[in-house]
Length: 440
Image 1 (cartoon, one colour):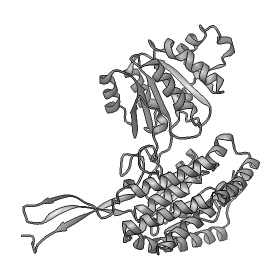
Image 2 (cartoon, one colour):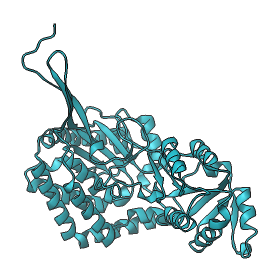
Image 3 (tube, helix red, strand yellow):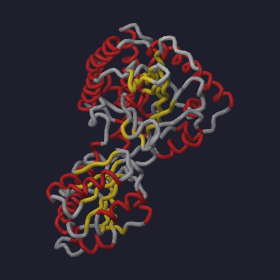
């Protein structure tokens, strides 16, 4: 997709890119100190101005985005990729709404918690502080530029954003708008910088500069994240796969189950919270599967099924119009990001949870059931960043969780998990309050 990605950079090119990133990193490090001391009103005024500028430049943004789409299409990018790249009136409105949600959130910086008196007389607690400089590496989605920039501003961080070359025109314009908003409230425009070079070496430079960048957040394909995991010298907040499941229990409401499974798979195909595997209890499958199969067939979703699912479908009157493929072991491990679904019949909730434990990626998994005890078991026992009862996996999103936006999804267990919003961009330091106490 990026012609330069397949070329080997010369040492001179590498040095040039590293020098460029080092200068950017130094500016970000200086800006982070100012951002950490910015007041909540100053940060919110900046975000109000940013929301206004985005709305004011709607036409220019769509024009720049059309240019990006044209280049991506000419390069052979697939439909899911183009979908992630596209800015329309609705997605621009969602960006603006996300900024307003972030404005409405309480400012965590400076909050003191867990303050407790010790026998020595001192009081010990935590103070919430920014992470510092956050490097964000992402592909195709220009909305990330705004989501990440706005969240980092509110959390008092500086950030360096490296979007994909396919979105360069849109990202350049968005970066300019963010810079204008920062300067309008006397904050440094270097608090949010977009890497204006498409060299592959830019990623290598960012992930090996701990002197400038405190944490890396990658958002992109599996190959990008695997590379970053292998090469990074900076801590990484990430998820590798989004192999999401919906389990329809034998105590599910059939109408509810059909609606949820349809939405979880077909609302959007190219997102990490899209269902990839549908699990159904044997006893309820005859009630819901025929309708779901017809929905998926009508919407052009390819069906990869277990033997029991095939037997059930082949008993349907119209089965000859339904194309089936046998699911392989690899299918249960696959995040398709495409109109493809794997379907498996299971005996019960224990078998469903065993399948999720074996093949899941600890991202998002859902159960559809009216049985309270089984719902609670699923919530407790499924070890994923988001676990849902009677809701579509598509809700695993910072905007939908009321975080305003997200900087990414983490299926790690350390520091941040699930949608990473405002709190995930902060850490804490210990504080000690005393009145002259000394240690005996």
